[in-house]
Amino acid sequence: MHDQSHWPADHPAVSSPKIGVLIVNLGTPEATDYWSMRRYLKEFLSDPRVIEVWRPLWWLILNGIILTTRPKASGEAYNAIWNKELDESPLKTITRAQATKLGAGLEGVHGGIIVDWAMRYGKPPIAEGLEKLKSQGCERILLFPLYPQYSAATTATVNDKAFDALHEMRWQPTLRIVPPYHDEPAYIDALAATITSHLDSLSWKPEMLLASFHGLPREYLEKGDPYHCHCQKTGRLLREALGRDETNFMTVFQSRFGKAEWLQPYTAETIENLGRSGVKNLAVVTPGFAADCVETLEEIAMQGKEQFCSNGGENFTLIPCLNDSEVSVSMLQDIATRELQGWI
Image (tube, rainbow, N blue to C red; front, side, top):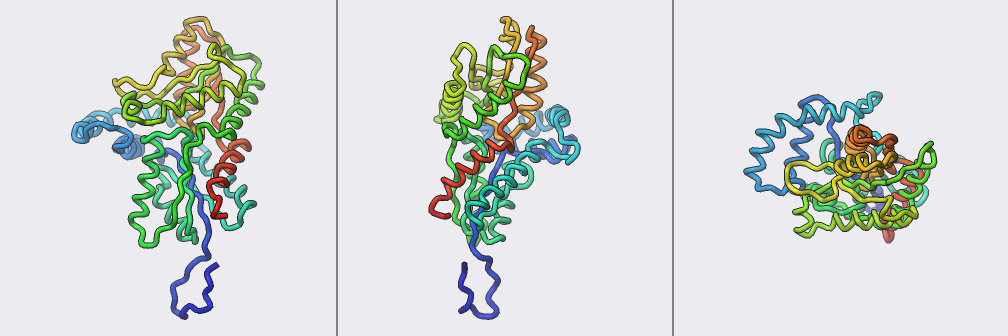
């Protein structure tokens, strides 16, 4: 508490010091129409952390081709999974719920903790989230990027944006950043529990379980990005936790964009090949996504199922992300509480 007894009468109001936690996910368009999608894609694909191409060349490709043709197709994909009731993407719905439940959990640990949420691209922006926490008296803020596996294209760009926001503040809050949690026992256990519960609810048993992570250009790995290694370790730990082996568990990479080589094996090709090879029952889990989104609900649950069944497969299921489930919120709370030590 600030001792205000000796302050002059005209001293500006100062809130009692609190601790903030800002969880951050990738982002979402505000609507599925052409211009909303275009604005979102432009912000996302203009990030030099995401697309490491010579900027003048990429500007021509982005503005001359991609932003002319891609918004319509992306809008159709989002429209297929859109939360019509709240008129927002599932990612926004789930991230908000994660923040609310995490805040309620941390309230029992320390009454002075305020939890909020933001998106790296789209709304609400990171700068707004930090300013909002600061205006509520948060002098110390824990930034929690919801990316279990670190990449310069994900975690690093969240950090960049946060420090850009601090650069504009006269009175900066103290900032901590949650490290990657790709091998956290609580994270692996939460994934294993979610997978086991979902598979137990099925009337059939998958012959193969794919752990599908978002892809990256292979060039990023060669430049030193640890993302591929983090994904492989998560896959191995998860396979061991489930008691599976390499004959019925594979780590694959989805969402390839452009013609360059990306991390392999590719999810789409693997799904098609499994169908052609005689596999009839397939389950896919997406451990790198903290919340279900267009890449899981449309790309995997819809496109992936079509790819599998049209190539001979019969039963296909997408295992839900951790989302705002009890095991997910408990895991987030465990990690946040550890990273807040010394502050609480």
